[in-house]
Length: 334
Image (cartoon, rainbow, N blue to C red; front, side, top):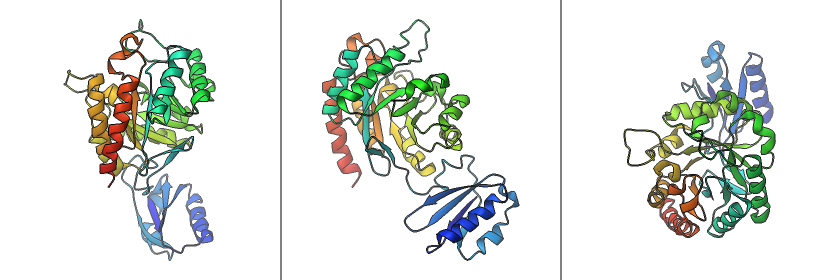
């Protein structure tokens, strides 16, 4: 249920109404807009008399919310959420590019790539320390050493860092990480999501391989229900009957999610296509579709990459992408 308060409602009046809801065993989420304040009432609201609520002098309107994802719903939170990472804003018209190698392979490699992508305009540095792989025989990442190399690249460049978590037990290792990524395979790892909900870290939540948008938002709800509302959603392609690309990039998810939720939505065309030559056109298309950012894989030597070299851009290719995406956005945001 939501209750929209009238302009001019005093803080005391609002707090009295919130206390009334809480006395009935309900939780209240407050969303303040430029004109109206929206109270999102969470819990079993069947005992709330909606006619009585609407009759109150300070209530402009009230209605029951049908979405099962309450906190992530735009109904509860009409204004776009803007996530700030090291001074770089994502969402609400703010656009950022996250770039770096799929996997951290050495201290020198991550440092070289970090400096290159920063010079081309990337705001955040990505790099995998723990790598989920389909085959148990593939490179699994440098793990703790990889996180250390990533932190050193952060100190070198000043870029906030993004890396994937595989297990809640690893959380103590992520103290210096600015954005914790939940990969597609873990989107419905609910125990991990609950643990992340108890942190104050920004969470980059990727859509599952065959997940619906509602399922993605329900996963975000798990994190938000724990108290952490700092979430960025990522469309990274879904599994379909098509086999010519690694996945099928669902760009319709971008405007659809913007209707459904207030959370920022970015796009990962690298994992979606699996082919470096397709990353540029899909990145431009994502920007035109209204994405709040991009996640791009960049490697200084893709031919010899230990992980996903086929979809990684060289620094020079990334520089071209950043320039062309900027031009697309000049047109798209008008």
